[in-house]
Image 1 (cartoon, helix red, strand yellow):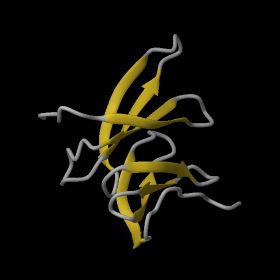
Image 2 (cartoon, rainbow, N blue to C red):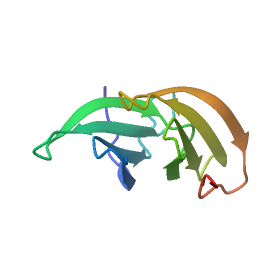
Image 3 (tube, rainbow, N blue to C red):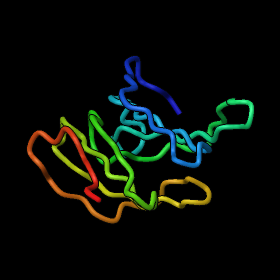
Length: 114
């Protein structure tokens, strides 16, 4: 995979089980022209192990968050004005397919209310 000259990582998130770490990559457009989320597992000694790169639903990921059960992730992309919802496997931490998407002008944040 050829990476662009300019990528920003904006947001990081560690799951409640302290076994999964996620990073948003802005302006990489490496999966179908979309920016990406990177998933790492965390070893007992704190070492990060790359697991997957998944599509983020748009360009310039500004925010992402997981629901209370940690089985969905909402991703807000500012430049494309979209919020996308993806499935997440709670045991493996892997992000699955997109289950919903909506256009939101100037989307900046995505939050679950629980």
